[in-house]
Image (cartoon, rainbow, N blue to C red):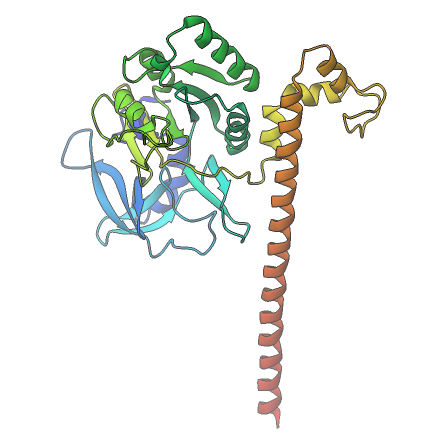
Amino acid sequence: MSEQFTSHPLSRYGWDEGFADAFTPYAAEGLVPGRIVRVDRGRCDLVVADETADGGVRTVHGDVSLVTTGDPLRIMCTGDWAAVDLTTGQVRALLPRRTAFVRSTSSQRSEGQVLAANVDLALIAVPLSADLDLGRVERFLALAWESGAEPVVVLTKADLVTDPAVLGHLLADTETAAPGAQVFAVSAATGDGVDVLTAVLAGSTSVLLGPSGAGKSTLANALVGTDVQDVQAIRDRDGKGRHTTTTRNLLPLPGGGVLIDTPGLRGVGLWDAEGGVSRTFSEIEALAADCRFHDCGHDSEPGCAVTAAIEDGTLSARRLDNYRKLLRENQRIAARTDARLRAELRREWKQRHAEGMRMVELKRGRSR
């Protein structure tokens, strides 16, 4: 990055040459760039350069009525870069996203929900206060790879595992389930591993994801270096956490870069994540290339390299089962989405057809 951008007040928030190029048409209109740090009830907070302070920034409230859309994948989100009119307080446009972490909603409408935009690293928080759920880790990984961000698995509350050998096994199991991703064991309570993770995040935009009770808010406080997020205790009756964080917040890190903290996720449905599933289970797809039949189902077919790997212990049956499960789920979502899109296209065609017929009738009336 050139000195022009490293000295820009928003550089620590991720501003660079690429975003500046995309912003050029808006600069000519007298607008200024801002990054959305929080969205709440149809409004947003943005950080912009503070012209009254040398190299400083300030937070402004934005009116988003001009960029409000019915498309859930185009709706503004924490991490978006925007073109802002400081005179009116209006957000006039959103810059094209580089990455977007998307999950399917829990509704029956087959819609995607963007959790964070323009993210470099997706931190998947996995609490060691409960049994390690590798299937859930793989689900998050598939979405992270699909988003365009690089996943990082963070085993939180590592201080609760007092036996180093056990912790080592947990790390090894997670690394096997997360090929190509970095895996760290961290304790925000004791500080162990926090410095290493801080170094990894420096200069990047990261999003912190995981279920309630994973210790995300505590970890966010440790990374930021101050208590920016409230922390609540785990419920005694079921060991689950409360929703401490209720909105997605973009927090500056002391060493540069920013962290987006998110509310706990109860459900993490796939959304158009076939590529992410393939990346998460890359060893299975590599083995499948050596099967005798190109359409091998990896069941009882002769010459199946995948089942051979299970038999010799180099691949776990659990991995194959979850690979199949996530592929099936993704196919169902894709089919439901295609059906919804076809229905929307039919409605649009009918509306245009009705409008066309109305114009024809009007012309006929004029000609009489």
